[in-house]
Image 1 (cartoon, protein in one colour):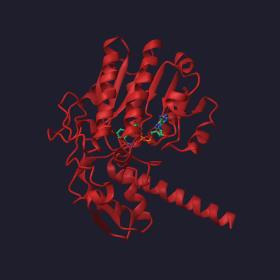
Image 2 (image 1 turned 90 degrees about the horizontal axis):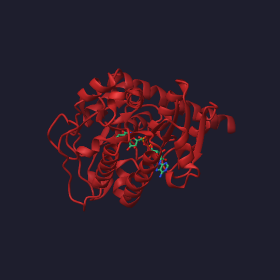
Image 3 (image 1 turned 135 degrees about the vertical axis):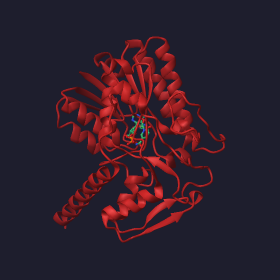
Length: 332
Ligand SMILES: NC(=O)c1ccc[n+]([C@@H]2O[C@H](COP(=O)([O-])OP(=O)(O)OC[C@H]3O[C@@H](n4cnc5c(N)ncnc54)[C@H](O)[C@@H]3O)[C@@H](O)[C@H]2O)c1
């Protein structure tokens, strides 16, 4: 199988490329390293079946030729991270909508199947739980720039469905809060990875708001398995599919769990949203997916419980920290 993965140096893209290579696929990976890491291309390139193409999607030379060669496209490249949406809505729309549209046009031209990665954010602040793929979406004002990401992914979903109506094989996946090794633990990253970093540094875990907001956290291996299944299962074509777990936890309880698992003595602190994001932000109180479509169409069964996934992620962070310390020791 020959595949193209956009966003291949990102958190999920990197894991997806590794899994595809392990299954014997030949993989072309595109990334502009805006949030992805160049060293991941070096790591992936150890397998001669990986071809790394650095650069933004709309500037990669010979993209049409590559698309002609592959059987399947996994489109993950996007501006990701709540703080980024608030800071730079232009880049969000230009990347997530305009570059996505360009890729879809090429896919249509060469009739190549495309798996588009969307997000739980598209449900907005809907309170009808669990979120079903056919449910209404509810967004706040355009003056609140956090919604630009949800709108950008929603617009891209409409494009995908429009092309599907013209005969393009498309699958839309809506991911729910993915975490695991290699996850971004900077201020732009997901909360689980950020908490783990703070815990291992002995710093207080920073809970935004009152911590009563809930999410369903999905371990990276489950997301990768579901994504690969979406590329392979004929029944998935033309569908929007939630990919996540339906085990809900509050952010405060997540912080407490990470403190227990890590043995951190740094405690936790609460930070008002406006102090972290500025005033162009509002939070979503609860987010729970209905994953029956994923079960039915992809035979998707999330296998890694939260506590185990967090423990694996903690272990990975500890190993990385030890490597960095050893490297510094060697250099001095
Ligand atoms: N991580 C999550 O919890 C989550 C949740 C819902 C949806 N998603 C979606 O999954 C996908 C992957 O997310 P991730 O968590 O791996 O984020 P990530 O930021 O690690 O990966 C995105 C990658 O795209 C690259 N990129 C950005 N703009 C580009 C461009 N114009 N051209 C080429 N490369 C570009 C970045 O450098 C990065 O490597 C995204 O589409 C995201 O919207 C992720």
